[in-house]
Structure formats: C-alpha cells, structure tokens
Image (cartoon, rainbow, N blue to C red; front, side, top):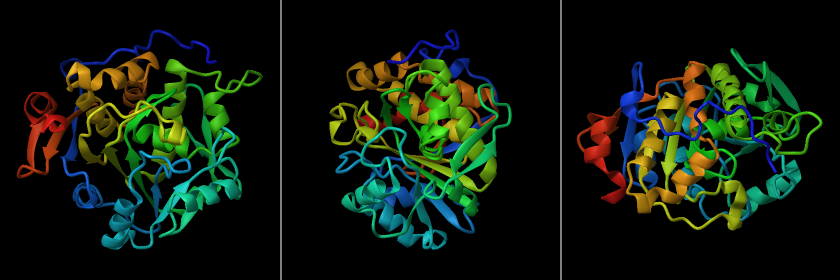
Length: 333
C-alpha cells in the first residue's frame, strides 16, 4: 500500500510533557458531552468569530455511527448569536464513494440529517491556491474555492483515530478537509507517477500539517478549535459503518485558539489512560507515526505543545498538564 517515507522524525514516539519546551497556551475542558458542554467550551474561545463564519465539520459517510451528533451542532448554531448564519463547510473526497462528487456528497448530507442549515461543498465550483509559508514539501495548497468567501472558521472536530494519520484532530480536519478533492488531497497523499496513497508516516504527517498551515494563515486570528473526545474508534469517520468498534472511553470536550495545544492535550489525555483503555488508540497513533503531526506543527510555528488546562467543571481552575494527568483523570470519572 504505502511506502515508508522520511524516517527519523520520531513520529512513532510520544514526547512526555517534561521533555517539551517553550510557552504555554490555554486549553479549556469539560467532561460534559452534550450540547451544553459544547456551548460551554466554545464560548471560551469565540472572541474572534465574526463576519461570515464557516464551521469545518466532518459530516460523515452515510449512517456513520461516531460523528458529532447533528442535534448538538444544531443547538450550538442556533444558540450563539454570531453562529446563527454560519455555514457548515466540507470538500469532496479523494477516494471514490458516497462523497466523491458534489451530487453524491449532497445525498449523503441528506441521509445524515445535515439539513438544518446551509452546507457549502467548498470545491463545488473549483479551487483556490493558498500559500504555505515555510513548507518543506509544498509551497501552496489547493483548497475549495469557496473558502476565501468566509471571514472566520470554527474547526469543530470529532477527535478519533485515523487509518493513515494515526489520529484525527483539528490538524487533520482542516489539513485534509479544506483541501479540494482532486488536486489538494492528491498533493497530500500521492507522489506524481505513483499509486494512490503512496505517501505515509512522517511525510504524510508533514504534508497534512503544511496544508493546515495554509488555512490557518488565511484566517489569521479569526479561527478557533473545538475537539470532541467521544466515540473514539481507531477508525476515521470516513470509514462510516465499517469503522472499528469503539473501545476507548469517552473523555469530554476541549477547546483552544491554539491548534497544536488542543491536539496535543487530546493526545496527552489518551496517553494518561490505563493501558487496557488506551492500547488500541496508542497503537494506531504510533504505528502510523502520528506524533509527527504535533512536532511538525511546532516546527512550523503553529502553536505550543505546552498548555494550561482550564477545568470548566471545577470553578475554571487552571492546572498544568502534569497535574491533569495525575488528578483530573476525566476519562475515569
């Protein structure tokens, strides 16, 4: 299937908190897996959400069992003043299936109930090239052309495993999810003249992250991130009803204006679980060299891998990651 690429970047190794350096960002956390919990964390990171707002969401394959519940999203959008006219955004897939063409994609959206607000298939009318500052593999990314019509983006992510990426957090959501289905996704996954999916491990993580940086830089301060740690199969939502069974405990909902701090905090909470709770997801992350997503984000200046975790369920107490692992244990409460 995929060739081994660019070894030696440590993507198979988890980096403990005490080995990390640099500044700390703020990550907000609630155990409350509900529309109320979603609103609680979003309201802590929504200060720069203004103008025409895109909500980047994985709407799932037909009847996908693990996606963020549409009723949660519907309530969030209807309850927050700045989100009342927000638009869910997606792009078509690189693989052939039920979201390969815009027509197929819209049928799947209807099947999955994403009919309560507009959904924009951003590459329906073509593509736009956005620059990647500091890219190693690419200097620009081909995204859905509609993306440049938005002023702000809420990256609303179901955190879970991923067949090729190891884990799918905010980085994967926009790195893959904003790239158009024919050009951008091909640049990420396939070398010219080689079979589809010829890129894997460190190089794939780096390409995903470079693609993400194009979107992050485009929106600047007008982008924010929410990760929902629920129904965390080792499979991505793109596997739909064929996803592996969920064996990892639910955790809660986290949010930050720092994409790296948020994805790192989610990975840290997985690694803080007991071995019988996290074995499957740890194995998926490590064998796909998924940790390279995090180190690449840091190397590209996209955020901090150290953070203060603010527990919104306990008087908004700020605790360090080390204390969180020792004392918070949200997954076992």
